[in-house]
Image (tube, rainbow, N blue to C red):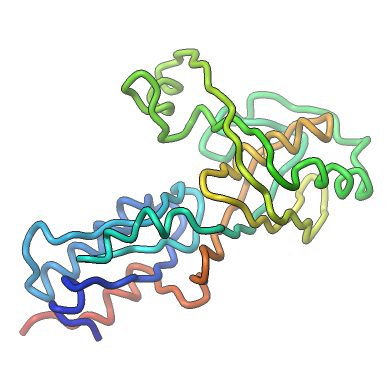
Length: 233
């Protein structure tokens, strides 16, 4: 059980973010519960160490109090994800946030081709972030440009894929597990993987399972965390 002093002195909370929740919503839920039930000051410090898209689930590391200073360090840790790539179609957002905009042949895709193509993505690679992302360009977030129908030139960035394992093939679906460096966009990886297969692809499921030594297996949903903090009498 956490006390007011625990939260202000600093805690790392391991949260399992539910589907459709934004990372901001998850942190706000914890903030509301802690502030009202532990009588914390209105502006006590709380923040997360790495955004998860609303359509992704899984590990969200939340820091409170003095531990918010550790956020940059925690954001830099190696991340692990599992998910599903759908081949044969692309979407503008590279996931299910937007509708399919193009379809591609898949008849030529074999298990052997899939496993060989994975090898192209191991080690240091260059990838372009999705146009539907929170990165800023000219003072606006990329998704704001995209929703306004504005063309934006996005520069490729270096990132590192430590492991890329195919765990299930049931075309058009391919399940995977990826271990990668900070700043990797798994949506972009799915899109680029589709191109490398001489087809198209988009992400249909994503779950962050690990970050450094933290695992989602030890995480609580925001609702389950709230249930641990008793209401003030």
